[in-house]
Image 1 (spheres, rainbow, N blue to C red):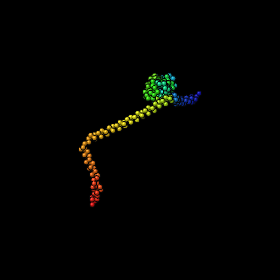
Image 2: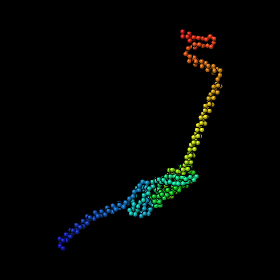
Image 3: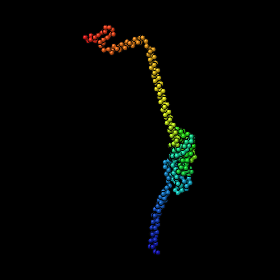
Image 4: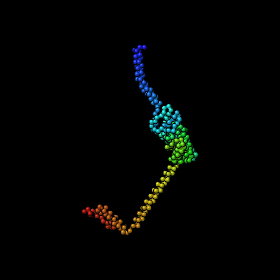
Amino acid sequence: MDEQDIQKVTEATKQAVHSAIKKGPMRVVLIIAVILVFFLFLSPFVQVGAGERGVVLNFGAVQDSVLNEGLHFRMPIMQKVAIMDVKVQKAVTDATSASADLQDVTSSVALNYHVVPDKANIVYQNLGVEFKERIIDPAIQEVMKAVSARYTAEELITKRAAVSEAMRANLAERLLPNNIAVDAVSIVAFSFSKVFTEAIEAKQTAEQLALKAKRDLDRIKIEAEQKITAAKAEAESLRLQRANISPDLIELRKIEANLKAIEKWDGTLPQVTGAGAVPFIGVGDIKKR
């Protein structure tokens, strides 16, 4: 190999080195970009919305920490975040029970509840997400049976507020150990047997008729009392008038009557006057002349 060949090999080596140096940074950038895209593809961030809590799972194991609302970082592949709704929710359940007087009662109960936010991880671990059918409905039915047994069928209607409050207190005590807080209980509807419903309607009708009769009797009594009072007042007035009558008063009334008669007289004398044997005749004609 002569000097020219050595020089050619040296130049080719230099060019290969320069080419490798130029391509090296691009490969590093490309590798970093691929890693970054892959990392983002694994969703390392999780967003917890308003009224929600995030339950952290490390390879499926529930952790003690509960994520509040906002954006949070998680370890891809290793960690998952389960979202729990802690807003107030509504559950409507139909329950059948018996009253204290052994009447069949069918009721529809609406329960407002929410998961205790700080215990969302325990609820998720013990109950899961869909727990209404397993926890809420049986609790409402059991409490409704216990509460309705304290009241008669009529009291369930007339004392509805007290029944609702008793159910709320019992449900709160029953569900709180499961980290479910009770906000309100409403009895949407009560229904009884047809025979009992007809009996209630008949009783209400009888009470209304009795009340109307009592009001009519009171009105008649008041009108009679008013008439008696008016008659007594009129009799008292007449008595006072008779007590005040005297000869002087009678003479004064005669004078007042004569004066009124004079005021009404138009000045024309009667044609025939007097009852004696010689009446005055033609007095009016004399006045005309």
